[in-house]
Length: 354
Image (cartoon, rainbow, N blue to C red; front, side, top):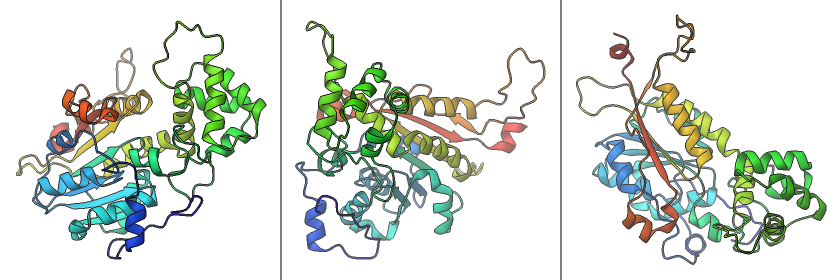
């Protein structure tokens, strides 16, 4: 696919041409993306035969394939992704499971409406694998990484109006600082924002990475060690802002409460489960807070003698602490090292309230 061309999404049931297959698989990796903690996802979602599952960020389909295999190829998957190139890839790689998968382009924030369009009211499990994939970093041509010199785009969905270039070149210094500080935890957000504003226009990842590096390393002692590339947090912040990732996460978590199946007391392991894989503290903090809040009956102040909030717990944490990849997985897939998996299951409200 040529740079600047709008990628097309090929729905299930339509064939992928030989040319598209070559474009889809034209990466520098033997595998376009390696899904993290696949074994743990399958185990903690308690995959069962004939179950219905949502893969909210289907990507290259690694988790979906594992779920299908664990269900003896009897599960039904609703696969969602903002990136039409990812859906093209999934269509091709998972063609043996065509009858089991429904693909939808969009955000998992809209899971409820997406499920309605396919006639699904409740599901047995939901997986949200957050962040960005290896194929987007390395071969999308959309400027997600500073490793290559590419246009400052960073849109997962090519129909999104705002690009990273728009933010970098049009935001005020204060607005830029807000993005970098709140979405990237960048301690030098103010300095970086000022340097960016003075160097406009900026159109490529190389330009931006060099400017940010200069700002971060300014007045830094040569003895000080830099653990990550100076532009890492800035690129993360811009990507999150462009794709409204944190807002989508909050909306997706809330939607999960209405979609997960209520337990069947006559059926073992029938609790609908939510599994979320986060890759940085901003995401994980939102997931942790959500599970804690939704597993608590009363949210009133402890000083208040009577509950007035009427909040009722709807979840039970399955993992008190987040699961992390094994040392073996980190060795074979270094990008998994920062991932954290949290799992919760829906409560039976009638039993809970007795």
